[in-house]
Amino acid sequence: MRAAPAGLTALPGRPSSVLFVCGRNAIRSPMAEVVARHLFPASLYVASAGVQPGDRDPFVDAVLEEIGLSLGDRRPQALADLEDLNFDLAVTLSPEAHHRMLELTRSFAIEVEYWPTFDPTGVVGSRTQILDAYRDVRNRLEARIRERFAPEPRAG
Image: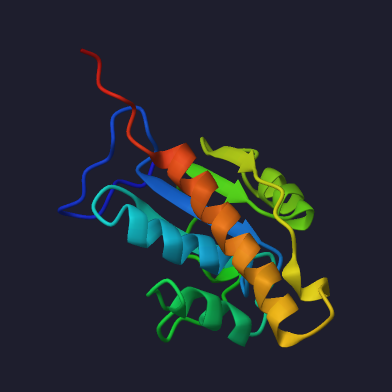
């Protein structure tokens, strides 16, 4: 289990480290990583990778900028680029990523969750229609992240 970096505290009963994985680490997983870092900066160690590295997608930059977030100078990376897979949880966002993570983690104590997430690169139409597809992915990921990693309600 990867411990939360110094100064960070894990929520009771929640993972302290999460890896988001998709096919190319260009759209879904980096978007999830940035959103999760924004929502839970002091309680969750977050990273992302792809089965293979892809190319940075300008539509991701555009829809993140709309909500005040940025990828910064981050570039897509492959699972092979990670130092290790010592995370509490891997969230896979595509079938390819899910199958690959199950293969890679057979001998690890890592939970793997599959969140099927639409790939907006297949959308054709106007720039507005394409951006709408990316926004939908961003919004769905944000909602799922909030739901999955929110602190449990306190009794009493």
